[in-house]
Image (cartoon, rainbow, N blue to C red):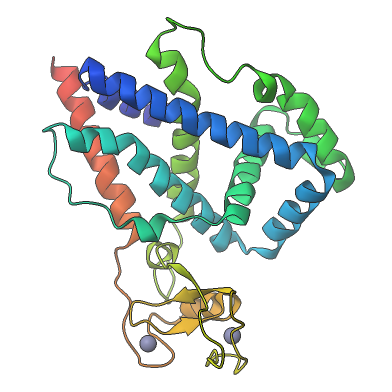
Length: 274
Ligand SMILES: [Zn+2]
Ligand SMILES: [Zn+2]
């Protein structure tokens, strides 16, 4: 659990007032995630639509989801470092970390599957139709536990589930960045923003179909828009825009994750010197 130790050591360098703000903020985020996962697991229809959404994603797209979730989680932690004088990080471009609701459901379910696979490997060998009930049984304690930790509990108790989630995501994301590709780097693709189509009559040049108003599509840095299902396979083979040949930046979300991570390591080293 090297990741966990790094995050906890970095957090322990915060002054007490910031530590208590941080633990409140992480506690409320953990609660939000818990509620969301619980509503996905308790509703057969939401569970199956989330599962369908996950099935529709390729493996790189699943890692992309986890990476976005990881980035916004790391930012939640390091916001509190920005207040201190530990670092001079510029304000983060939040748009690259925005996660749609269906994606958030999907990523939480995906992380829940990973945890299940680790501790109860046989459950996911069962039929799909039994998964929801089995997961409900496994996680019922966790999901129903009183949201707020008892008054006077150590801030570490509150931080632990969040830090575990971040460590797990980070290990998965790191594992995904091994394979070499000739297209755009996974880190670039992970950082592409989803935007809503505002006006009709715009066509996706890849499939030649109109992009429907209100649909969320992918925007490249050159501001050209494409269906996600069209641009992702394209970027697998090339790192330029199909309209204008604009070359994509190579260090987007992953660079940002790495930068925040390096900062946490620096803070944790500082802690070990004390
Ligand atoms: Zn298209
Ligand atoms: Zn373009």
